[in-house]
Length: 369
Image (cartoon, rainbow, N blue to C red; front, side, top):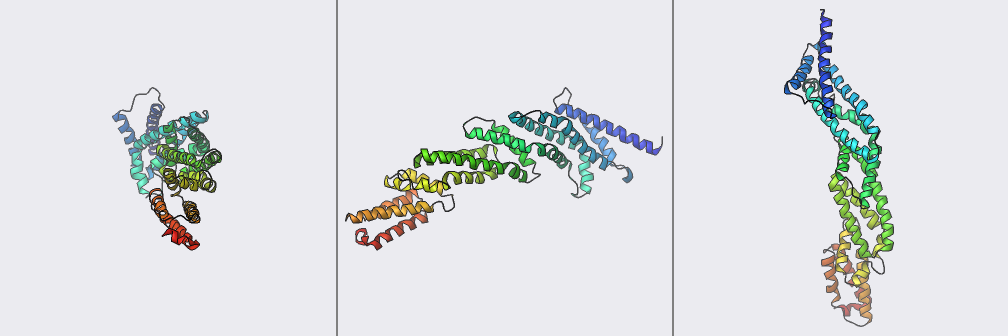
């Protein structure tokens, strides 16, 4: 037999054996009746690939095997994975996507073990110029599955989150697994998660709470409104803990705060019957403390509250002066609010100080001392 024929036979026989091992692996992953790999079978697959890679320079089949590795994953994805996904919709599609993602990872992990010498030698010799086998596997899934389905999956996930916000029970583990698909397909970054999912989640969040605020602000007194805000902020933080990426928390909280607190601040805080000054008038210290807690994290969020606090002190002090009553206890009274409700915040110390200075300038100094 000629040398070229020997080489061809060596290639064909080697790849034929490898192909049978790959077929066996696919059957196992797909749940078909197939006995597990024995150690000797696994070792022979590895040895076959190793032998094809350690030939002389002209007969080194590492590049061909590296290309075959990609082709095997692409063929499996195109002919088995995508058809199973395309025939399902909504939550059923999400479940299948998670199943296929998990199976893909198992497939690539086992396949990379068979081809391990390619990683150890061929890939290493190129000093990072080509992808590792694991990276090849992830790229195949990203290019063939993720690109086609990420938008449809995103809409289905957002529908589930909306249902949960409305009080329905959902499969949180399913959502968590899907979020992981977005994260892992970022190839080590959060870019795909942020651009393909998170940005739309935040838009939906803003829209949802804008609608809630419009209704609540008309129906509820300020204390009841604030209780709802506190409750829903807690829910959104829990939502992040259960199935969103941790970096989403400050972004989603900011959206909720903006729609429920910032946009309606004037209407909420200045409500004649239940706003900030009504709470001060009625000694509602728990509600004032809650108001402080809600607005404190918001940039400049406390300024309108401090202004209303100042105006209330001036109004009450002026009323007492006009009635020719001593108001020497007024400063102590409002210092209690500063300490207990407003956590000794400098903004409220300043508001109190300015209020009493205003009263002194207006002629009430002898009543204040």
